[in-house]
Image 1 (cartoon, one colour):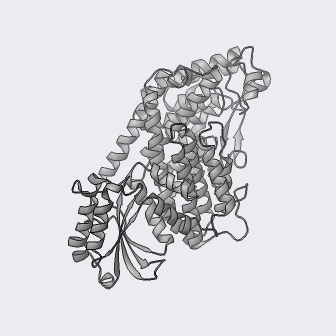
Image 2: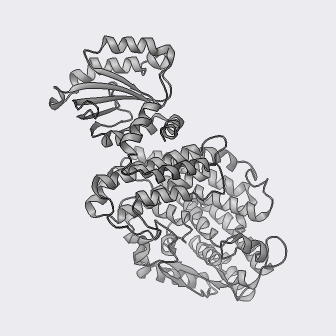
Image 3: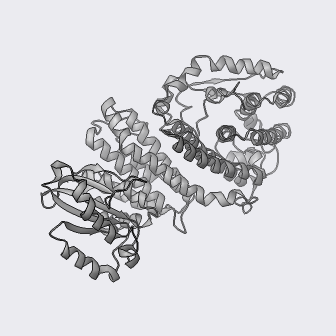
Length: 568
């Protein structure tokens, strides 16, 4: 297990990733963190400060961490103003003289250089001499990847929380992380055991509380991050990594909602904040890999064997790109500078999404009815980032192809998730779709609703006419969640456990009449459901949207109906 953790630590590409892991480790070692890493503020050599008793010696000490990334060679040792040698001297000459609190004056001082790499042999003599020369001032140690891995295994993944079966499941998940067909079941078992959840999302007897719950959340995060980083290898599948960190984030949030108020606040303040940032970091890495493909025609779909496979790939990427854009666009902000930062990043992702739609013709031919969720998220992202014209252009093409599919009974977005159904009855590989595949449609209702929202009344009225004249037996429908939505949304597909269907929807001939129907629903009890979202109340709106896509739960119509009447 130590080898697994050490390898994970070595894959951390950014120093701030280690910055965020180490405070959790120190807490489990019994320390109280005094100062955490801060970007932009001069820290005089100290990245993390903590006080407490040394778990090995029992001595009361002030622990000062100098965090670096990668191996420490000659340049990293004394090559510039940010080098290790300079950082430790800053601690001696400035920090210990001017930054010590009165309660720390009598404490033993221990300085640790922590890195995700190793101390190279070329630096060993200089390091040893420096440690010896300054032993009267402080105890100086080096924690490389192996040392940190040992501490994580001992203090964070101890046998009382992280059992042998958890270790086996994590190893098995890591071994299969490069398989695009792997369903991550081993990782999911580990998550559920650690979070005290059964397969219905309910708490088992005697669930963890207090520090044990916080520790469990940290373990879930560490396991997900280790798995995700494994997928960044040359033979890995980063899509698997993204889905893993999403599941860890969603199930952790679900578990937090089952705790009492105090435990809930503590969990959100520390471990869930780490999970949230972990998702952001990995989503950024995923986007960096997918972004170049968005600007090349059919870059990921050109090698597929048929239209079904192309459509599945195209709409999965549409949903993922939209989720990331919305995560960035809805991110909590405290200053104008933060607003500009998140908005700028959201627009970069929206640029890629728009390019993906332009460069992949199959992005107008959904093969599954549930792709309506991906379409809704993408519409939200495009409109929210000021790309209404791109949204309208895409919607016209979607209507053209979906309308043709129902008329011709070919290439129909089927209302099941079975690929066998699609091949045998969907009309995608020859022949016509069966009547069973034409029974119902969320897709048509989604196109109708967005047509009205975007002021495309002519398109809506053409759809209403064709639905009546050319495919009258298709049951057009939508799903409206009820108040118990949030008991299920973050754990599994919610529409099988909550809410009611609006079916069959008889599309009135005029767009204005349908607009009135949508407004009635928006102002009904259904409209109040989205106001009860615990994620929205915590300022984490994007969490709900990620949950909808991740578990293939339809996005509540009242959520996107809210755009009616706005300036688009």
